[in-house]
Image (cartoon, rainbow, N blue to C red):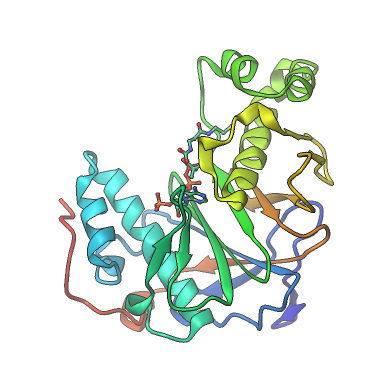
Length: 271
Ligand SMILES: CC(C)(COP(=O)(O)OP(=O)(O)OC[C@H]1O[C@@H](n2cnc3c(N)ncnc32)[C@H](O)[C@@H]1OP(=O)(O)O)[C@@H](O)C(=O)NCCC(=O)NCCS
């Protein structure tokens, strides 16, 4: 698929090549078997949470206001604002009119349309939204960070095959290996909709690309490497053996604030 002469396909290297302004998201038709991934990384000059707060519904606003630390609250607001802007472009309603229901383990689903599936992930100042039709999907991004108990976490939680692969990885590469495992495992769990109610050692993911997935009894799932940029690790899981992956990096421009189709009104306590 091409957009403005730039290939939007995400290949084995996981890179997202195409950019699109946040103020004018125009998604292509999403056909069965396709996954569309949208990624944004907020920098200091990009719109702050006030630009997005008016898009959120009362439940999201209440959740935002429960964060103890302002930076957590602000990241949540921006992530949910981006989610709404992306979904609104697919569904064809204003972002503030997007509404959600939740599955039994908390997986959010669109109430406006039973055509689109989506998954949201946010970490640090990054946000990823994946959209598909006709198949379940999960996306996960993580900003790698130091973890004192990383090796112990792997030994206690990962499958035997993953522990062996992790321990065979040289020390300098273990950070990268850990966050690849983490995002791949979490993308799969988010796709299933089970979150952490499913034991982490009940399935095995690989470290290479294409990404191996051994999850007996779960059907035709596949896992895909995502390298969204800005230092983030990432993965996408799909209930399809060979989906076509497309990706866009959302860009903020000087006029983003005035162009963004939002309703101003409710405003979470932005400190
Ligand atoms: C959903 C979950 C699996 C992922 O959370 P996370 O990686 O911390 O955060 P992400 O930003 O990637 O994903 C959160 C989003 O997933 C979605 N989500 C929530 N429950 C979900 C579920 N059961 N299935 C799918 N998606 C779900 C929501 O959109 C949520 O966003 P919100 O909290 O802003 O509403 C969560 O259950 C969790 O607690 N994870 C703990 C992290 C951990 O220890 N992981 C070990 C991996 S090796």
